[in-house]
Amino acid sequence: MWQVTCWIYRYFATLDLAFVLDESKLQEVDSLWKEFETPEKANKVVKLKHFEKFQDTTEALAAATAMTEGKMGKSLKKVLKKVVAKEAHEQLAISDAKLGGVIKEKLNLSCVHSPAVAELMRGIRTQMESLITGLPPREISAMSLGLAHSLSRYKLKFSPDKVDTMIVQAISLLDDLDKELNNYIMRCREWYGWHFPEVGKIITDNLAYCKSVRKIGARTNVATTDLSEHLPEEVEAEVKLAAEISMGTEVSEEDIGNIMHLCDQVIEITEYRTQLYDYLKNRMMAIAPNLTVMVGELVGARLISHAGSLLNLAKHPASTVQILGAEKALFRALKTRRDTPKYGLIYHASLVGQTSAKNKGKISRMLAAKASLAIRYDALGEDTNAEMGVENRAKLEARLRHLEEKGIRRISGTGKAMAKSDKYQHKSDVKVYDPSGDSTLPSVSKKRKFEEVEEEEVATPVTVKTKKPKKEPVEEPEASTAAEETPKKKKKKSKKAEEEAMDVKEEEATVSPTEESSKKKKKKKKVKEEEGD
Image (cartoon, rainbow, N blue to C red; front, side, top):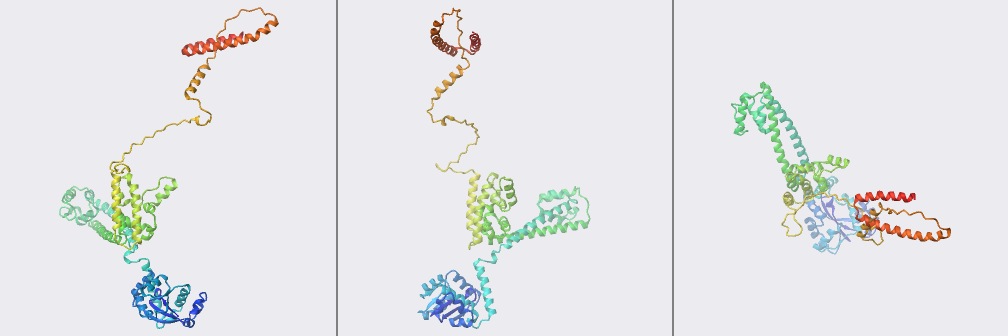
């Protein structure tokens, strides 16, 4: 007979032990659910052995979390030692195999885990109200709901101190207060400027200006008013001097009263903004300490607000964190096929702000990579310290110093010398195609080719025959003798023409350009005369 340990505290705040009365039913796994259709059938299969109720939800949560992690809680250990150890020869049916291994190791009890046991556990849960007597259904549902909420909070690592919704609301309100303060201060300066315009240029700080106006009131009261609480001595003396020669118009007491009321509003909003900023700083250090160290409270809060929550921000890659807040510029650049933005909200971080213009892109990329790690550590980690953020910020500051000092070291050599980079000069060389590689025939030497080309260029325009001396007319002999002489004359003429051509080439090699032109003309005349003959 099996002894079943039913882990009811996964759903209810109880711990039960039951005996299996009929083991033959467990062999039919597919039809086992039919044995638990009614409470009567369920009582025939299993019988309650021991029932123990948890004292409160905290104890039930501790036992449930220990079971989910595969550990044996204190209450379970106590019950097993008290009840099950007495009947050690029986087998213990376990719904979690990992927990069964722990029980077997610590208490030396034989445990069973199989599909039949899983189906048996399912049947027991369906008929829990009938198997356990003395517990009303309403109380069981209340206990199960409370334990389910506590367990889900534990699984999600939920804590009231880590609610990022407060950060989203606080940073939104801070931005709204800044806008309202700017509008109020501009209105106050313009309104009081009609009465005392000089004081607006002397007192540049907005809060000090409103406090001074609140204390002065009408311009005529400046001489008798002590402004040392709000202004330095030099500025106070300058204000009193300007009041004597002011060009402002006269206003009524009612106007001054409204202006002073507006100043009160500016002072109150400024004080509340300071208080809200301190609250936001504390919340950021509690929820995202590493991100706060990396980029600051305001930038970190704006990143969380833009993403919606810290968990959503942790899902973004570093490239998205880098340009978060510059979505319009990104899509406009993609549409017009121009350069995409290098930074978004992260541009306002102190590390990016203290960098020169040419290195802002590099630093923002490195800062986004480290910040994304810090965000995931804050959102999903269990520690609440800022050691990782401090370490990564130190690395970024060291890298920033190297970039600013042009400290790019050489890989080879001593590593201490600075890398030398020559100024880039664009050299546009026009390359000519070389056709020598196109032919597979044996190539002739270049020198010989150039000589042949020069000889052809010189020889082509000046191919002129020398003037032949005129022969006296000879009486024609008989037909038979004339026929014999014609081949001999042709041979002699061809030999003479070759000798004359060789003489012409030798003369052309030594003749100047002017002589060449005169010779060409003479040769043309000779050619014409020969053709005429």
